[in-house]
Image 1 (cartoon, protein in one colour):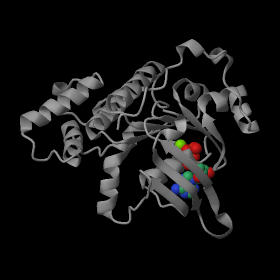
Image 2 (cartoon, protein in one colour):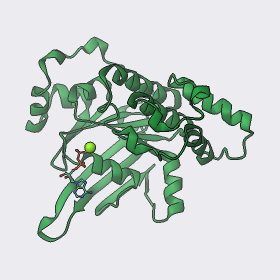
Image 3 (cartoon, helix red, strand yellow):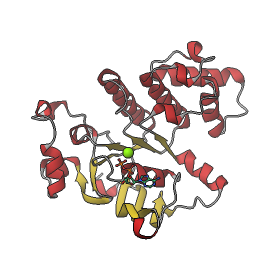
Image 4 (tube, helix red, strand yellow):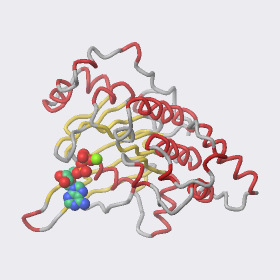
Length: 280
Ligand SMILES: Nc1ncnc2c1ncn2[C@@H]1O[C@H](COP(=O)(O)OP(=O)(O)O)[C@@H](O)[C@H]1O
Ligand SMILES: [Mg+2]
């Protein structure tokens, strides 16, 4: 199958977000076009303040789109009611940078996981089946469900909380996962583990990952497709090889030149091969 033959899962035309009013208006995201294809790992790369999180929030439906259209599985997205938004969230989920902000701190861990099973229509499953599913999801991320049941998320370390986020995704099985700098607040050792788990999950359930990062070296290592954002605009996009080995925008060249020398030269042999094909 060629690149172009993969079906679109999420795309946008002229997507814009304006914050503020009058002469204080700021375009956090400024008329961006994108075509994310099924089964790919797409990285959105840009410095802090370039509009990455704002774009993620619009794609998830957490903040309104000021102008432009988002298309989900080829159809114009309709999230005009709470019910439609909940249906949309069965197909698209997110992991954010700060795991502390991602949980309702009053919910114990088994409640967090049970909610995921319920969201996927498992409310009426027998209790033993639910426990089996939660145990499986926890063991996928090397957590022991039996030791977690009576704990609250804040009793976990940052790395464990981020792993619990991945266990949620394991249960929710969305078609698309938005991962907004999911490893930037955890230590380097946990970072590699989290990345491996995310990539393993993509292979397990065949989801499309949109990975947001300021680290262009990491983007090269994991992505099929790369979008570069500067001041709310997409300045360049294409295959990871085209964009990072043969950059055309001056901004991309600057990001590459800013990569600490310890990363160079990129280890081509170690680069993870793209997942074979989309499976859903
Ligand atoms: N809720 C908000 N109100 C006003 N301005 C905002 C808000 N959220 C983000 N911005 C502004 O939008 C721009 C892009 O921010 P953000 O999307 O967080 O970028 P990134 O994730 O790339 O660091 C920044 O200039 C930021 O200050
Ligand atoms: Mg951000």
